[in-house]
Length: 405
Image (tube, rainbow, N blue to C red; front, top):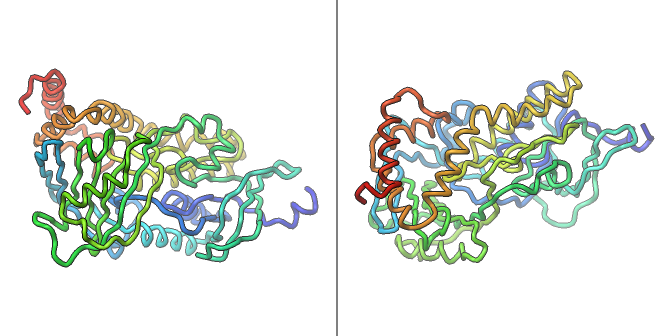
């Protein structure tokens, strides 16, 4: 080891990215007694509806005070404006504001023993002894001005730095194979005089081609604010224009806009999450946002936990093959769901005619029950085999055009 390396701080794990995935990974490792640096950049934005299912609230011990709203109904709006309300029976979906939620997770990681530093990841290199060096531009907490170059050594690195991860680009083979939509939303202040039909406990999802040619648009309640957004992989489609049209159509054109946010959202898990040596990915960096639904917070936090457990096993055994466990365990439990949702998005979101049929299918009580059972519990429901059979034949009728719309 050269003298410079001896003077550089060394951590068991450096986690790059302090969103739900990175914060969860840092907390998990710190509680296992590992030395952890959580590196997060200031001014980070992420357009997100902020929905978290009961499974997340339970598994990751989320306190009630972080829930700014509780959604008990989802409304699906077809191209014809036909509406289907799907009640969430005997439960709710929690809604969180990401800036408060993410900071709470980072604070919890710090309380568990992780060291926090604010800065922008620049590159990875190696010391003479082969240990990774994480280079970053450090800034004072929440300070967005000029920073200073800094570096730390890391036995392992977890890349949780979001879609189009720079850690992944530099370290992971096949990182360029990700598939994305670009999401944009506007956080608006909930007006004193609400538009007709608005319900603070309902999430509205719009399957209309003029609002998104290949995804959907949304209006999600957040208590004293609303998230109004859309997404598309079509680079020529105006997301801001879509949100403007949506706001006008629902009577929120004049509501105060608090902020605007946009970012790429991955919709396909990367084929590989580790470099076979000392880097593993988690969250958006690994591509774990659910196709069709765009849900990502639960999968990000689970991915962070699995990456941390794989890193811990690698450190304990000295066997870098343990890093493969993060992706292997995730895909075993959720790969089928991601595949089904990907096919669903590809087919049903392809045209307004198909979107109309898709919303019509969602009137079916069997579809509603199984959909929410799977969403709330994060696993395919197998307890009602006859319901699956009925849904199969109903879907087939819609696919063949035999069902009435």
